[in-house]
Each structure stands twice: as structure tokens, then as C-alpha cells.
Image: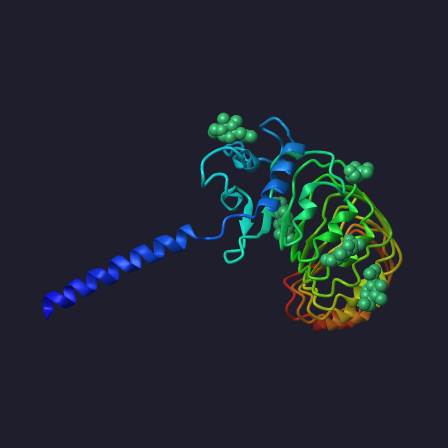
Length: 292
Ligand SMILES: *[C@@H]1O[C@H](CO)[C@@H](O)[C@H](O)[C@H]1NC(C)=O
Ligand SMILES: *[C@@H]1O[C@H](CO)[C@@H](O)[C@H](O)[C@H]1NC(C)=O
Ligand SMILES: *[C@@H]1O[C@H](CO)[C@@H](O)[C@H](O)[C@H]1NC(C)=O
Ligand SMILES: *[C@@H]1O[C@H](CO)[C@@H](O)[C@H](O)[C@H]1NC(C)=O
Ligand SMILES: *[C@@H]1O[C@H](CO)[C@@H](O)[C@H](O)[C@H]1NC(C)=O
């Protein structure tokens, strides 16, 4: 009896090992169309010589591990550096090519815009000296988009209004121009960073008043003019608000006193006048306040 149960135990252990082994090996491999889109992207980008400004000199560029020809495992794009696949479907859902010294002519035909299941795209800290292609609007599943310091310039394309699932959007330190940001329908955004855009001016767009989930809004170091709009006081989830370093005039709107979750408020380096409204005293969570 004891011997039987010992055998039974061994058998179960054996089956468990077999089962987990075959589970691991049946993890879906990447889909051929997505793999070829990635290889096509690799073929069109140009990797600047190392070391380059942002990259970690101890690591080879991620894209170098993308290889069509080497063994079974390596040719599965889900195993490539910077590529994340859905564990069930095997579709490519994440691409992180930040700090990769990439440079290329990127346009609406660029193959990464065919990866329309992407939930996360990080191209931060590269050197794409082109407009943001309007094909970005194909990536309607994106939750996180980071193009910070990636060299893009020009206007924010209207197709951004298609990215309605975005939660985090970082377009900071780009050569962006214009006075509008077609972001009003991105109502799930909690994090919006538009800091340090080259010639981003005009008034703070009234459409930002619709971004009711915002917790982090950074508009610092742009060319914004007009007053600090009163509607910012409706964005009651804000914890961080900075329109510092612009050309804003007029008074501090008393409505900012509604933002009781604020921990950081920076209005410095503008041309604000008049008294500090007493409602600022409601901001009991503030740890950083700069009115310089
Ligand atoms: C793929 O890897 C092999 C062996 O490591 C290498 O010789 C070849 O140049 C690589 N191909 C590409 C396209 O990087
Ligand atoms: C994209 O590809 C099409 C068809 O190959 C071509 O006509 C068009 O000029 C390309 N667009 C850009 C921006 O390269
Ligand atoms: C975007 O990428 C930059 C550079 O890697 C990083 O500093 C920044 O925190 C990222 N933004 C977000 C919103 O995660
Ligand atoms: C918006 O997304 C839909 C589907 O995700 C796509 O068919 C359409 O072309 C996109 N529009 C723009 C302007 O990118
Ligand atoms: C935003 O959504 C509204 C209502 O769905 C729509 O009428 C409007 O055209 C959208 N705005 C943009 C810029 O797509």
C-alpha cells in the first residue's frame, strides 16, 4: 500500500513535470506578421555608433538581439529585448526601445504602426528627427506612450484623438510647435507631460478641462500665454500641477483651492500678479509650493 502510494506520488510528480514542460514549450510564439514588422523596423532604423548620449554603454542596443536567422528560441520575437507579448495570444503588446540611439526616417509607412495591438510604446530618448506620423492613430489600444526626448518635432497630429485608451502620455522635451493639442477625447489620461516643448504656445487649451482623471499635469517651460485658466480647478484628482516657466499673466484663480489632493504646485517663472488667493490655504496635502 505504502509502496503503491509512493509510486503514485512519483507518477504525479513526473506528470506535473511533463505538463509544465509542455506548457512552457506551447507558450504561443510570436505571430509572423508582427515578427516581420519588427524586422522591417530594424532594417529601416539606423543605430548611431556607441556610446551615444542616452544609452547605457554597458548594454548592446536592444534591437541587435532581433535576429531572423538564429535558432528556434531566438527567432521567436517574443524573446527579443524590448518586446513584450501577450502570454495567451502571443501578440506583441509592448515595445520598449527607449535609450537605444535609434535614428531613422519614421513616417506613416513605418512598420511599427502595424502593431495595432500595442498597449505600450516607449521610444523615449532617441533621435528621430521627423514629425510624429499620423499613423500613430492606428495604435488605438495604447495605454502608455512615451516619446520623451525622442527628437520628434512639428505638430501633435490630429490622429492622437484616436488614442482614447491612453493613461500615460509623455511628450516632453520634443521640438513640438502649435497652439492646440488634440487630446480632449483622451479622458482616461492620468499622466500628461508636455514639458519643454520647443514652441508650444497659445493659451492652455480649454479641452484640458475634460481630462477629469488627470493626476499629473506638467506644462512647464513652454510658450503658453493668457491666464491660468479657472477650469484647472475642476481636475480634482491632480496631485502634481506645473505650468511653470511660461508667459502666463493675470491672477492665480481661486478655483485652484479645489485641488485638495495636490502635493506639488509650481506656478513659478510666469508673470502672475495680484494677491495669492486665500483658497490656496485649502491645499493641506501640499509639500511643494513654488510661486517664485
Ligand atoms: C544573427 O545572428 C547571427 C549569429 O549570432 C549573426 O551572424 C547574424 O549576423 C545575425 N543577423 C542579423 C540580421 O543580425
Ligand atoms: C507610403 O507607401 C506608399 C505606397 O508604397 C507610398 O505611395 C507613399 O509615398 C509612402 N509614404 C511615405 C510618407 O513614405
Ligand atoms: C519616459 O521615458 C523617460 C526616459 O526613459 C523617463 O525618464 C520618463 O519617466 C518616462 N515617462 C513616463 C511617463 O514614464
Ligand atoms: C482610428 O482607429 C481606427 C481603429 O482602431 C482606425 O481604423 C482608424 O484608421 C484610426 N484613425 C486614425 C485617424 O488614425
Ligand atoms: C471627441 O469625441 C466627440 C464625441 O465622441 C466627437 O464629436 C469629437 O469629434 C471628438 N474629437 C476629436 C478631436 O476627435
